[in-house]
Image (tube, rainbow, N blue to C red; front, side, top):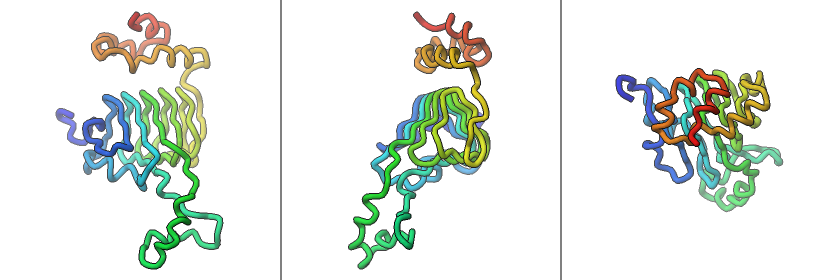
Length: 200
């Protein structure tokens, strides 16, 4: 980003076919924001995907723990002997049937605060906010504010009817020129004003 060396748009930087990032989603990190894919998406051996929507704001240190971090818990030891190779590799089948929680999905227009950790298979709804330092272990509804360890619902940003309207309006799918013309309404307007600004 011009004059903001700690901020990068993620979409052009992602190389893994298992990661999808929408337009204008950014990551902020003073150390090396360009290393997001390797430093912030952890234990990503597949086949599950990480999907992050458009217009998301990811604070410094946001981490996505993927299914590859799983260990067996049904026996006396949780140690993953087969990954060490050698004669232990013969037991690799003990790691291939671990529970897989599926894709991790972050909706559009989501704000993840500084140091948020998202566990495998979590879905975070459109317009949600997750507070700094939170550990997200359960799905977060659209337009909700969640926080804590484990993250819990703090409140909804809008009433249920307005959330339904906002999801139907889906401003993040508007043409970029239309968004540009209505940035003030998108950032600070009412649901009614946003609905009135929607393209026909």
